[in-house]
Length: 131
Image (cartoon, rainbow, N blue to C red; front, side):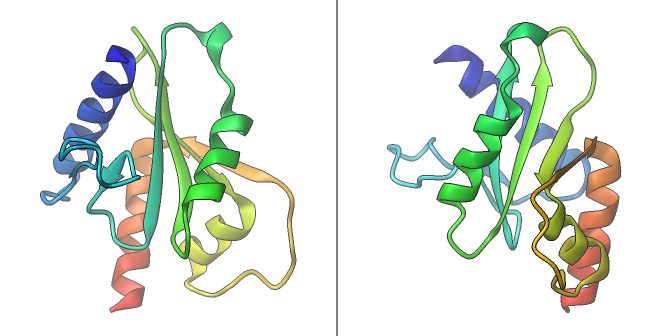
């Protein structure tokens, strides 16, 4: 699965560019870890690297992230080959927690998608609130 490994490697580099130097691929050590990416506290990342826009299935990827997240916040980091930048998708209830530091008071069945660089700003602010 070359696209998967490539996407994971590229997203690791993206995280390191944002100062998360401990981030690495979860599968690189004999496939023992079940996460695509490890090293982002409180976050479970499902990485999707699509060959073309027609292949996008963000809802399915988000459902997989939710299923595998355990007690972490599930997110999907995705991009399409030959397009710049990462995108991040997460449930609205998780976005509210990330943005405010407080749990969402209502069950919302929607998702939020944003530019990866913008998500990193919000995530770093969340980590500061959690200290």
